Amino acid sequence: MLSFSEIHAFVASAETGSFSKAARRLHLSQPAVSQQIHSLECYLGTKLFQRNSRGVTLTDAGKALLPMARELLSLSHRIRETMNSMEARNTAHLTIGCTAATGRVMLPLVVAAFNQERPDTRLTIEMNHCDSVERALLAQEIQLGISGRKVAHRNIECQSFFTDHVTLVVPPDHPFAHRSSVQPGELIGQPFILHDEKSSTRKMVQEELEKQGIRIDQLQVVMIAEQAEALGVAVEHRLGIAFTCRLAARHGLRSGYLVEVPVEGLRLERPLYLMHNTHSPTQAAQSQFWSFVGTHQDNIAQIVSA
Image (cartoon, rainbow, N blue to C red; front, side, top):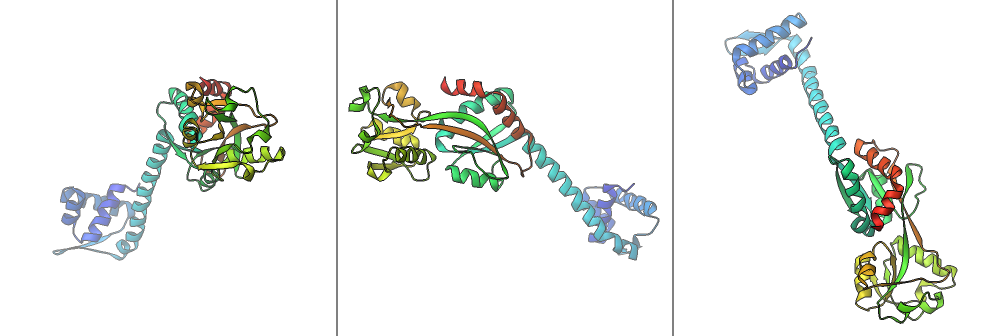
């Protein structure tokens, strides 16, 4: 059987033209290299080198073997690198893409619960808009994604993750704060802070308002906020009122800096979906997190609401 140590000795000797120089390159003794070359020649049944006082030169058989030997060593290296890389991915790392509100408030709580079962898995959370999360998933830049919409793409599979609610929040001294509910028409003329146009929350609010005959441009917009946290801070400081995810507003609602006010006729449930690309190689950590979500639906709601 061919030995990789013999192949290494052969290639080093061919490239240096000397058994002694090959020995120094391989950190072996010169007799050890000579013995490996002798064993290889016996196995192949042919001479590979012509010996002379200046060193060694390849025979015709040696010249024919050299490119194949180099290819064999290269393949051996690629096999080791691939196996090491796969082992590291399977045991160490999982990247999940999501929106900022999900990544900063909810997902860390779910990841903490998952890590209690799989403490050997390291997770990275990448936050972006829904569109960017979906593109990253299709480009195989992330292993899993969380989106506020169920993606209709042949390569993406979705499962339910959590249902959040979008709500109107106002400062505690606002006239709406002590009302049991308000009518959609009462929103016109109120100073509003809106999510940016890429936000799935804004798109949902816009669609629901249009069902009530209200266009988004009829609102008195005083600020556009890219991050839900900035929107909540602006409302706390009485810059205006806003629609935002209850999850993102949780701290302000609990502390009393924000007050939730129902708006009649608006159905503002925001389901979140966990997604994966069915054409991507499946890693162990990815399958484990997918299964964790599928079997802990009720627990996830309790974890987030706690």
